[in-house]
Length: 178
Picture (cartoon, rainbow, N blue to C red):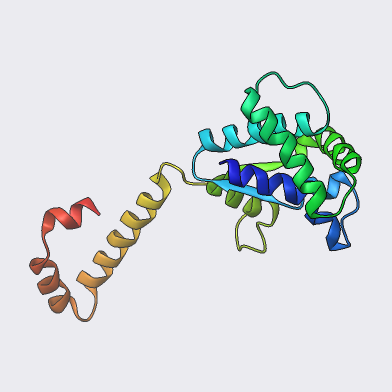
């Protein structure tokens, strides 16, 4: 997590400004997303980023150990040195990012994908009011309906004898559990 936090900070405090189209904290904050697998990890990463930003911005941060505090201050120096920036500029950018902290994106892959789909539903071929099927209920309903419809069509279709023979070879419990 520390490496991801360091890279996130380096990107938002320095690297992104070298890209030409980003010249302020609002754009910098919205230019990167950190993705984790669990909500817990996303929350922890977000808190580490904010605590580190506060310290880099010159604010008092009591929730860091002495070792972490020293590490973050060294990181601030390393960011300034690596990108040939005045350390005061890094401090100013950290202060500006804190003011835009609501734009800092740290989420799970599922949350990020859902956000993208809600932002551009039509482009993704979705109804604008779609809701993710987190429980799998809707998926199961659609599968059961498709199996039922196809089975009825197969039994009553022109090749019904072949279809019935196929169904007889299947495990009936497996078919019922679909």
